[in-house]
Image 1 (cartoon, rainbow, N blue to C red):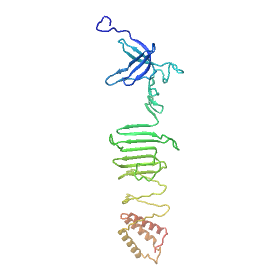
Image 2: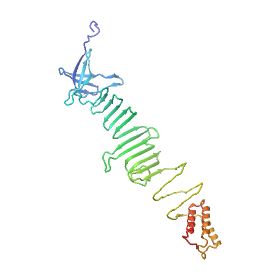
Image 3: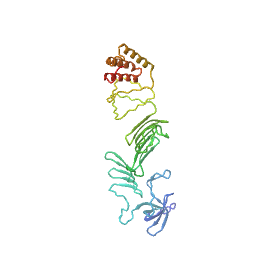
Image 4: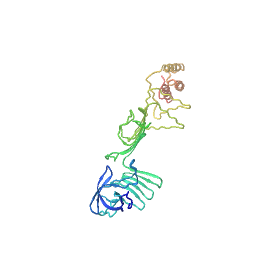
Length: 362
């Protein structure tokens, strides 16, 4: 100040315009060509909005593109600082240039590819990379709307991926939705996986009998496969369970099967009914085959034959006392039910044949 020998004389700051000639991306300085006389001013710093921390870098920062029109102030102590930019006049664009459409009260932060953050005056916030990669926050209805072509959410707890095939197939572009959940944070393999959409036929369910393209698959894994459910595009369903299964149905259960039912059991089949146990065949007899003859069953059947002889039913009296024999077979089947239910069903069939006069006693 004048009159203070310890201070140099300060001068009035001057604001000038210039064109950004080059950008130093390492120290965030600009080389600017001054519009008034063409002088190149090097190492010009940019004014930061809000704050500027040399330690943490906190603040609002941005680097311009070469060719942009800027306003530069030469401060009273002789330092050059860029304080802002202006849209140059562009052919066909007027003063707006390539800036996005805005209304009064809108604020935007836009990159050179149209990506940016739009804070609209009505309360909508839009974060956009491109048309198919953006998120909108809409105050009406408190809606968060994601618009995307592919989505990934990755976490130490699992991942979610929603994607599509790069090339369109004969049935259109295939899409898939995959959700993986870890049992513990940082697990290398998920505990649960769900896949939906146009998926390859390869399945994560061991011994699955169908090979069609998968449309849904759900698997649970520990250190190895535990449970899985799969549905393919043909409508086939397959499930796998590593160990035991328990179903507790409080009400009634109805299973309708339009075709055959094949049941393969390595161990025993045990059926218990508090009330009646009924097995019916509408179009034919019940056929029961056993590969192993039980000694107790053979003994009871021998006893039946001896009683039939005592009743006078033999080769000389065919079908004379069919009702009596059928009744005996039914009673014997009741005794056999707890010992050998398969043989009991066979005796019931024999009794049914006798009552229907389909066989003759001999």
